[in-house]
Amino acid sequence: MRFTTPSLGGQGELQVADLAAHQWRIALGYRHLHADQLFVGTQRLPTNQPLIINLHSVDVTASYAVSDRFSLSLTVPFVYGMQSRLYADSARHAVTAVGLGDVSLVGSGWLLDPHNHSGNIALGLGVKAPSGTHTASADYFLADSTAIQYPVDQSIEPGDGGWGIILQLQAYRRAFHNGTAYLTGSYLINPRRLSDVPKDPGGKVYWSVPDVYSARLGLAYAVWPERGVSVSLGGRIDGQPVRDLIGGGDPGFRRPGYSISLDPSVALTTGPSQLALSVPIRLSANREASVLDLQTGKHGGGDFASTLIFVSYSRRF
Image (cartoon, rainbow, N blue to C red; front, side):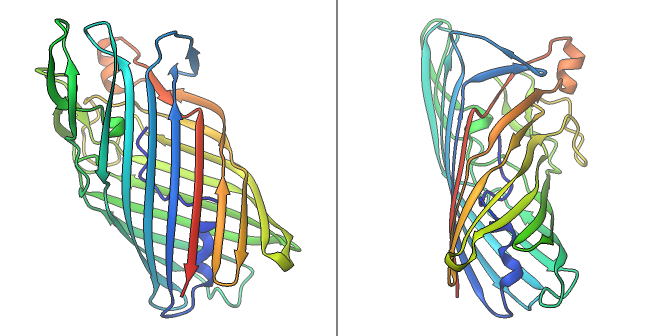
């Protein structure tokens, strides 16, 4: 459920290519995610008592072009999350968490001069700070119907509790007249092994601080160049791995898995401004078995987004 990779829709990730030296771009990105479908492996399990998650996030990103080929981007996210589920008292309760998310700073550089080539590749390296709380608390209902204050589920916490290393890749190439192929990818390395929050009150199994990844591949086409209207269609994958690259917190509690989506979007560019909308359509999902699942012999489940919407607005100065 966690989504800490860039959330701008459309071709927002490639806009840095048209930033001249010493220009700024301010971008506002909104994401809505709704999940109420349980998966174990690739199988969706029907249930009349689903776990329901609604997430709303707003990212404010300020990018500065140090040169025509190198830029710095600071992203400040704000998150609102709601989870509704059955507790030990056999009743459904909803809890919420809201606040500042994990702030990130990324430097990105184009390997080629963007003014003299019809294709290019950019590599990015950054850091994610644990500025968002990972211990936002709400009522936790026990079997005797009493309620205690306890951190909400990790899926709706504003932060994950760890410093992170961000690796990014962007690439594009002109495929034909008014058509551009694109590829973007992001991998968040979380070196911290485990959170300091047990999955359940009094439990001895703690939440992992998992890596997260996302990638998009597709084709963008300027359908009405005179009016700045373009569309794109491709695929995307979002997920978290069973094992982290660094850290060794794999035996902690996590919900590894990935979803693959069709990724249509539309963008309107007017002068220095761009408005983009992307509505990914889930094609498949796989809630993979975690290390803890393999140790206990019980394959846990997880929710994947049934509704996912990205809206972004950016302006160049």
